[in-house]
Picture 1 (cartoon, rainbow, N blue to C red):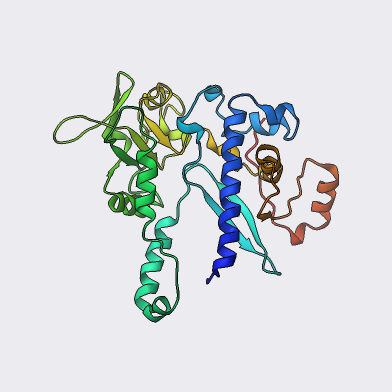
Picture 2 (cartoon, rainbow, N blue to C red):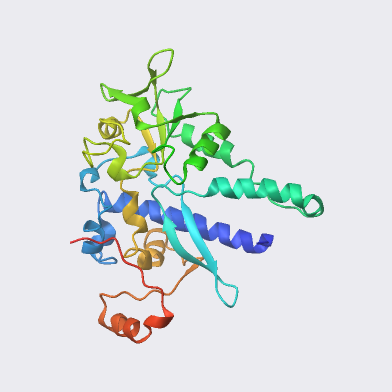
Length: 299
């Protein structure tokens, strides 16, 4: 798909605006809860969501940034308008395929790239590594960054290995790390090495068996305590899943207006919410023309 520069500038501005609002929303719902008190979003939609982590209410994260890597799905409707289909704020994947596709295109259609000013994508790994290193706890001048993967049986393992290699960092599994005195260490042939930043591709539930699912073999026991103590940084932060819940999605434009005082640059897909009587009637009458998605709300 060829995206002209003017269209891309519009999309880029809209995505930046959106992720700023989502980060402010996450900080708010884990601290003051102003948007909930103002009844801009129903409180039960947030606090009853399974990815809302009550244990992290009041916990601070570096720079107040929860979403360091966001995967936003876009569509174009019949009149060419870009619309956001959904946000992926937990452990988004797919960027490696974009980079590999670009390499293939450059080999197959070299003239296309010689004759046109195509924006490069090969700087992604370097930009990501810089952002990850900037998350390191204070006093760590040469921070150690690792990519935490569930392992070879994960569907996105190719990407985990690809990005770790491109960034020049270690690709690790939970068994490769351990926590001592609220500090995270990596097992190496030269002995334990302290880890400062974990780019984690493991979901919250499996991240630490002492804090979440006790049967998880993918995580690192004690990682959450080290995170809360400020001795290690995680990307993305814990609890970000509440921001990409299908029940919260319809309210993102309201978040943008509330936190940023701006009108949304990108439109969304029109969404009907089944818990509203008028919307439910419309859904039932037009079910054959709609995509129906379950929310993550529990309770």
